[in-house]
Image 1 (cartoon, one colour):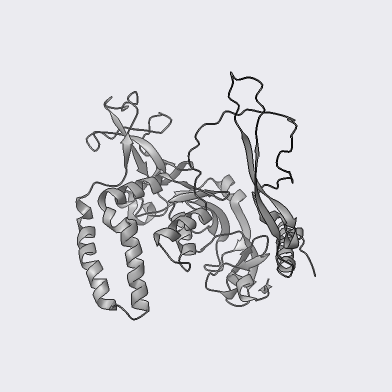
Image 2 (cartoon, rainbow, N blue to C red):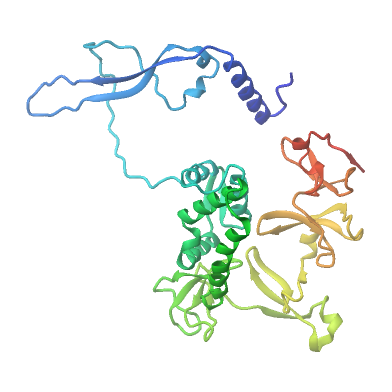
Length: 402
């Protein structure tokens, strides 16, 4: 049997092998042990503490002989007898401070949801996917870090819709849905009891302030225009300092303290809508500041979504793969809120986009572009509805043609 060609596959093979073999072996026998060492007093002037260690002794290894890592953090202690004298080899002292709780991982967050009755095993994966896709958290390794958007949304909901995000409400709603599934509760009445008051509360959101205020700016951070106080706000491109008197004053600064100026005209007409509507109705090209730096776009955005790209940079990001949707443009690398993706160079006229680099091959099943896969999937279809999008789940062999 092939154990795999890369390190991840070898580790997976080793894990499966150990679990299978250990399941056929005898039980391990461990003796939970606590050893306490008393210090001989050499003087009545000093109080010496007792030293202790908690762990276990292996009486019979059993299946642990195959999978020793399964003991986890359990400490193996030596066999000692009561009254036995121990020699002090080394004595170290450590200064420790109270540490803040570690951040959640996906597994830790699920473990927190379970005792609260929030979600079900069938919904945990979609919950994790949703908070990442909407930009509420970012994942670094296994650790989840809240984003500015997540902080703002969480604060807004806590301040205005606390009833609907409480543990008791969420858990009781889950129970009611279970009762509907089991035939113990009426479906229509349950929805009416929830949606009628909920829709009323949602309609009142127009009266609420926009969820963009993230608190006051430092005292020494003054508005570049009126020299007044500033507040921290959240925009599509991240946090910035805004004049507290907005909209009377539109002064703004970056989080580094630099003055944030509005769009600057380049003197050029937009080649997309300017040519169609003429100088009177067409847009002009302006320089804007975005999340990834300055860029040139139409002044009529979002009505006109033209973005002028540097020709040299555009060539570097362009692939040799022709867009199968319009058969005119080439698939090129772009960057969005969720990272790098590939789309047609004729955007916005052609909106074809895929989430990974295209290989140039076409899927035999649906005719969509094939794209680079992961370490375990060499190549897969870009169409989410196609079986070849996740061939390892369907058992399909990768099919492609030039």
